[in-house]
Image 1 (cartoon, rainbow, N blue to C red):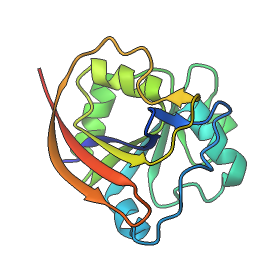
Image 2 (image 1 turned 120 degrees about the vertical axis):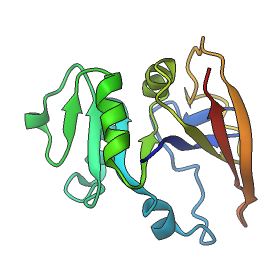
Image 3 (image 1 turned 30 degrees about the vertical axis):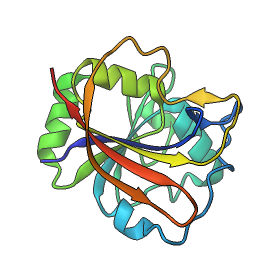
Length: 173
């Protein structure tokens, strides 16, 4: 059974992207094994804004070996290739997805989507790659959070670039 893991890079001052969605501030670190990282996941969940940013770069090869689910009330699956569009967070659907996967499910970007899934107790872990930079402004990974959850630190890794990767388990209430 897979877990939903909210995994993202964040500036030290709490932003997951610059004001226009840019992420050019995240350094390339050759000590991070991206093949191993991506091999952990069977599926990817994301909001429409995150998907639009990634699809603008290369929609045909976006996670070709993974099931991609985009949550949006404004687009249809027929508008996009190689993704399933869902109009809202459905607890039953996400739980069935978790049960049907052998590996984990990457909740990629999308602080609002994270909040929706967290409110329904569907997120199992949070992995934050804290990048040593202050952006000053941008898109936060935890927008207007009204939800309180305790976390347990599972592991912490420091990479050559100064990135600290923090693995947390969400203590379910």
